[in-house]
Figure 1: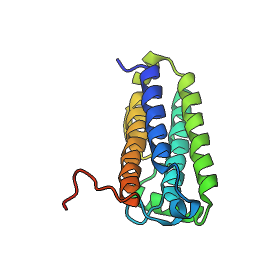
Figure 2: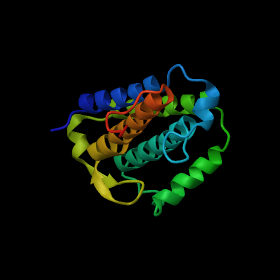
Figure 3: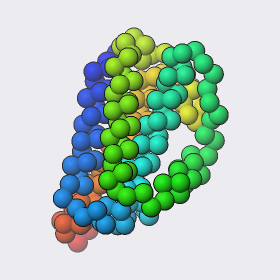
Amino acid sequence: MVRVSELKQEINEAHERFFAALEGFETTDLEMKPISGVWSARDMAGHMADWHHEIVDSVERIRANQPPARPIRDVDAWNHDQAAVRGIQPWPEAAEDLRSAWARVIECLDQIQDDELERKGPYPTGTVEPLRSFFRRLIARHVANHASEAERWRMRMLGIRDRGEQP
């Protein structure tokens, strides 16, 4: 059985990796240089913060026995729209938004008992899953994936070749 403490540890470690990979870079690099596709560190931080809020909102509705909000039918379009809304937000604001959203995730987990993690409800996309999946798959793994992208970007920015790269 998954424990709240395990999920909190996974979520904290993933966020710490993401921010550690970006330490020491100029704000302009974090706002302008692409990490993944066209997304910069700023875009990625805003993207994760937006998803954190959607997920916590969904969890809170499930726990309160409230009906789900409108599902996000097209994830790519939603991601694109959210990135456009954030537009030219400065890196420090995007980073703070992610830190605040991360704290909200941890606060939400602090209110949940281990056995409640098996309770099922709809994701923001409408798929029904146990609450543990909201936190493990949609937050911890999502952030860990973006942390890995940020770590590869860091190596490229520092001129260090990724082990998987061909010479």
